[in-house]
Structures are given as structure tokens and as C-alpha cells.
View (tube, rainbow, N blue to C red):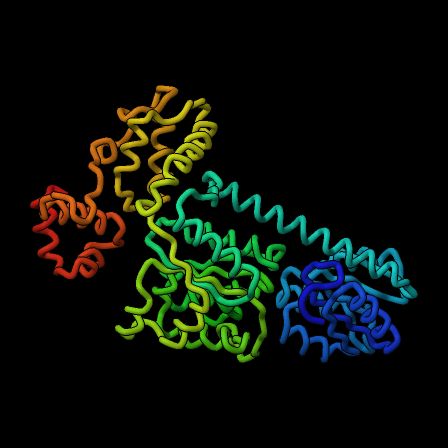
Length: 453
């Protein structure tokens, strides 16, 4: 059964393992009526094969499978489908076996014979529990970030268009490429796309491509077997497996090593992959959102990024504008951040003065939303007045001049200084800034000395 279940919810992937054909058919029919996708097998070996190939949300395991014990499948299932809820079914029910089932990791336990109503009740409980888990994980993630919730409403026409495109794209399953300078809110928009999508009840995970070595990044994405490399002390399922039916954000995808790019391309094309140190091929259904502050088209032309992977990732391209391109939103964003950080610091601010807001609008914000957030947090800590005036702003902002527009009577040196300051603020290194400016690092050092940067 594909798509949404009859209840409008994302269908659960369910494994049924029972050596009695009538029992398998009965459970399968009950589950399909509830909108589940079912794989039913009759023995231990077939169950192992199914567990290796797919990721399951629920498993109904018969306690006795010929000469084998259904309990023996539990640890194997827990490794390959870490979030699976396990229900033991048996004709030999006893208090001891029920306790043993729960101790080994089962979620529920039902004796034979059972009724369709019991199966329906179990599925309902599991769906409710999954919803609670997702909500808890989302709240924990929000709390751990300790940042104000970003309001995606906007007065800027260019940002309104971005949000509209993102909401439309969220409803589909196509891969999305988010482009924009560092700090523009690509991660925030990626999470919003997930929350607007049919996958909202499933996990949202992210991997930062520049933060790990090639070996560790491959393991983080695809998982690894114990002993497959130094430090692999236990099996790890990987983010792709953990994100089953959810969304995976590949942050700064431009830094993905060339050695991993063919493997990611294969996963996108076939939804199949292997863990590091294993030969077993696995399937997973994960929506990919890639984010990058660099020009991937240029990276392709320079041989640093595969062209075919670029086209697979950029089915939908969304470019997030820099904060200086949406100055209509600065007052609202800064005001909501001030309220948030004010509460965190037990302060009751009345807002920003007109002069302070004018300085905010004149400043170029090379660090975008991230810089605005950090600036407002600093103000909330050190400003003693209820109304935040220009005197409470950092010097670089309070003394900032309006950005020159095309045709303004502005000295060329001033334009060059402003441009170099912007590039240096957003670049990760001197070399990156020099490359962006089209000069060597020695020339950049001279320019910095000239302008006192």
C-alpha cells in the first residue's frame, strides 16, 4: 500500500513473522485495513533477510518459529531498525514469557487467539507513541539550540517568494538545494520545509559535511559495522537509516568529499546503499535537502563536485536572500529577538529607538541572521536601558553608513572598502576571501592594512 493510509497518516512499515499461514494472513489483513505496509514471512531465516533489506516501524514476532525462538530476532531487529516497536504474539502465553519479552525490548505482548480490534488498538497506540516521540525530539532540539524561534513571516517581497516556493516544494518528495550566504537561515528553512511536508511526523536529521573527515562522514551518513575502521567499537546504523521516511539535511554539501559523492549519487538514484565494512545492500526512503553557501555550479566546473550529483540534488533550487536584501524585516526580527533574549536575562525591554533601528538598516550584516542574533543577545546582556538606543549598539553598527547604491556619488575606495569588509566577514578564511575577490592573499593583506580592516 503506497501513500497515505486510510486515516491520512503516513503508513507504518510492518514486519509479520509467524509460521502459521492463517495467522499471517489475519494480521496482514488487519494491518492493511489500518493503512500499513506489510511484509509477512513464515520463518526465522526469511525474517532475517527482510530485516536486512528494509527499515520497519513495527514488527509482530511469533514466540516460537519451529526450532527457533522469536526472542532471538529482537536484538537483530533493534540494530537494523532502531525505532521499531516489537509486539510478541504467542499461543503459549504466561506471566514469565510476558516479562521476558518486555525485558528483551518488546513494546507489547498479545496471546493467541486475538481479535482484529486488538491489532487495531496496538497500531493506534504505536502511532500515538510515535507522535509523542517526534514532538519530544522537536522540543528538545529547539531547547538545546537556545535561540529564538525564527518567524518565517516576512514583509520583504523577495523573502515572501522564497517562503511560497518552499511551501509548494515541501508537499512533493523532490530533493531541494538551499543556496545563500552563511547565516541566512538555510537550516531553519530546511526544518520548516520538513514540518510543512507529509514527512513531518518522521525524523528531521542533519549532517555537517565540513565537520568530519571523509571516513567519518561516510560512516555518519551510511553507518558502519563494528571493527570496520579504527574507533568503530560498535555497529552504527547511520543517519540515512535513522532518518527513514523523514528528512536529512546535508549542510554545506559543497564540502562533500569526492570519494563519497558517487555513493550519495547511487543512494539518490536507487535508494540503496551499504554500510562501511559490510556488503549487505539496504534500502531507505529519506528526503534530502542540501544547503550550500558556495556556488556549486562553479565547483562542478572546477572538478570539485560531480555534475550528475549536482543535478540530482538541485531538482528544486531555492536561494535565500541576504539580510541586507530584506531590510524590511530587520525591525521585526530584531524586536522579537530582543524580547526572547530579554526574557532569558530577566530584562523587560521596550524595544529599539528609531536611531538604533536606522543604524540596523544601514549596516550591511555580512553575517546575516546569525550576526543579528548574536548582536541582539549581546545587547540584551549589557544594555541597561529599557529602550535600546544607538549607544547600546556595537561601534561597527552604530557608526555604519548607508550602503552606496548604483549611481550614488561615492568614492571608489569607499566602495572597495565596504565590499572587502563584507567578503571578509562571510568568508571562512583569508584564502577564501581572496579567491572570491579575485586577488592573491598578499594583495588582500595590503588592502586590509590600507583600510584598517
